[in-house]
Length: 309
Ligand code: NDP
Ligand code: OXD
Image 1 (cartoon, protein in one colour):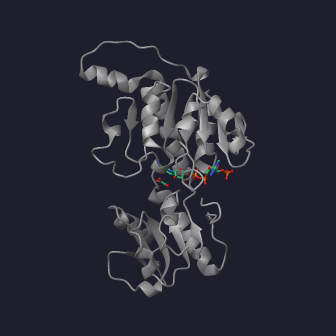
Image 2 (cartoon, helix red, strand yellow):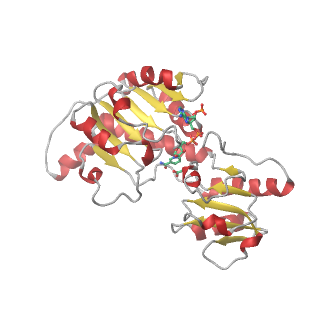
Image 3 (cartoon, helix red, strand yellow):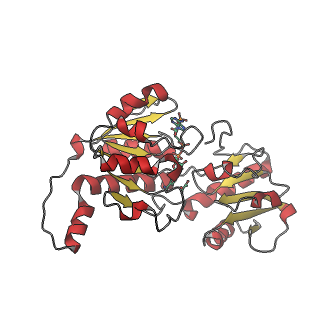
């Protein structure tokens, strides 16, 4: 009985070490090293190579090493009949919240513009915005969206959120479903996308949606590149309906060098690093689920196949 880690970045060895030092009895392999594939019961995956899961005939469940699972559903060779779990982690939510707060304050106070001015030796005070005057809308009030919404409300923003279902959250106005999307957008000076990427949300950040935002609205996309129609964002920044955007995620990652985002002054880019699964906080839940599976207990943090998140 063993676990395989399948991901294409340079983090496999550190995850393997972290799991084994947490529980030395576990047999954990990188998919790149020799191992008996018939013995593998669990695959821990993050953007695995398409088709790689077909090599494991006895998987009991699949675990995403992140909060998102879109890359699993996009692989039509993945064994979707077995349970799929994902990361639900307080540290991941806090990291996301800190990242979004930093982006919003940077925008309100124009800090990155001053940095550009500094490189050109330009002394140019520009008007700043105040927290108390700004309404933030969060698309997606799940684990991450709720943390971000609550933290922003605590520091004084007017906050509202949109989800599939209504939420009861103190100081956060809740909107749900297609019928309530436009009234929500109409009041969002800053729009933060924290939706999962599914069939229903692909391309949701498009010109119809942008046209419902107040003039000069600001966009923050920290969910997935597939939510955004890149050209629509360019058009809405160029026609000055949207004042700018912070993007952490892209259709293709790393973003190709010839993409127009690189040279777009109004777009602040970060390299899909808003919040990253931390071995210290995530390994215990991976091991707990493995033990639950062995004991025949229900797994934690299961993904709904119907909903796709
Ligand atoms: P959750 O599954 O906990 O929350 C998803 C939220 O989106 C829920 O509130 C859900 O509504 C809502 N939602 C889903 N589909 C729709 C829809 N069609 N219409 C309206 N609302 C919808 O996800 P997390 O908060 O854990 O994570 C969100 C995403 O953040 C991840 O899927 C991932 O893509 C991204 N992410 C990005 C990271 C980064 O570093 N940039 C790091 C981690 C995650 P309801 O509550 O009613 O079900
Ligand atoms: C995630 C991510 O989904 O890092 O966890 O994007």
